[in-house]
Structure formats: C-alpha cells, structure tokens
Length: 157
Image (tube, rainbow, N blue to C red; front, side, top):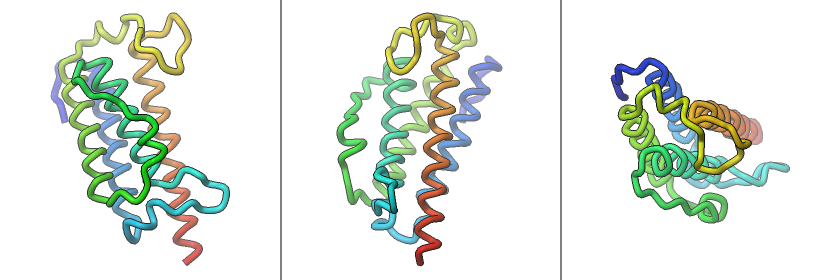
C-alpha cells in the first residue's frame, strides 16, 4: 500500500486496496476451485468470472489508462474463461492491487481534477476523480454479488 503525500489519491488507493483485499478473502472462502465457476440459479456470472472481470477492469482503467503500465485488457477472457484455479484468480487480483498502488502512489491530487478521456461508462465532462469513484462503486457492486453467490452455494450444501 502506498504512502503518497496526496490525501485524495491516498484515499482512493486505500479504499481500492481494502476492497481488493476483500475480493481475495471472498475467493479464498470458496470451498474449492470448482465452486468459483458454478452458475447458481439465475446467476450467469459466477465468482471466478467476476473476479477476473474486476481485476481486468482495474488493471485496464487504473493501471493502463491512468498509469501507463502497458496492460492490455482481454475483456472476452474475463467473461469467457472457465475453470481457472483459485491461485490464478488470486494472482490476477494481486496484479490489480499492484497496478492500483503504483498508479495512485505516483498520482497527485491535481490529476483527479483532469478531464477523464479514457472512455468507459462516464459521460463527457467527467473527471479522473469521477472515474475512480465509479471504479470503487463497480468493485463493491460485484463484490456483493460474489458474496451472495458464495452464500447461495453454501446454503445449497
């Protein structure tokens, strides 16, 4: 985790790192690797898919677009890969954590006010701060889905 002197970017770094840690905890809480890929009821995106998506999303938007890491996103893989091991998923999450820490650790608060030009779901006129806020919400939305998915499977046992 970074110790940047910039309080606003440090806040985003802290929150994203905390929630990526929660994602790791959820992935570890599944009883085995196979359970991460079970489609339960009407849930078509199991935990493995969502974990890959979240790691890829943050490596793309924060790492590549904000931090110029060179990461190349493979969104079809995020939603199409199946049966990756828990350790492979945890490595993807760890890569996202490193990208977030390095990028936000090097970013000053003034960068948050700059117009967001990296595309994605925001309207014209959005700032980098708005994009980071969106990414934090997106992470938590899917983190809740993963938690719910895990509990549904546990109840079925």
